[in-house]
Length: 70
Image (cartoon, rainbow, N blue to C red; front, top):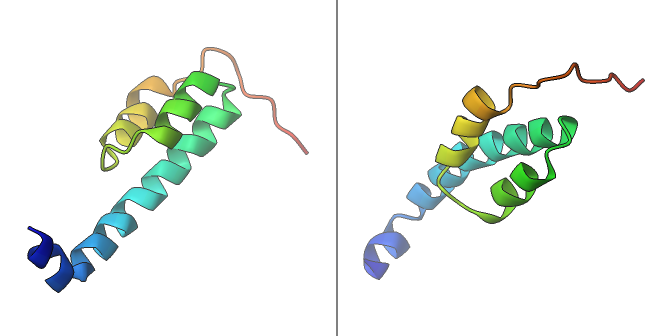
């Protein structure tokens, strides 16, 4: 397994290209909605963007309108 990873470092690069945008959007949405628990969980737990995608599309629905900051 170690040899596979060392010989194919591009796979790790592709995984990071997949994870970073999803994590960024999920963290941004949770911060905007004031959901500190979700922010901490998304920040700490790495699920290869599965948790982030679930949060963005299912759990980030706000019950109240978000205040716009100028």
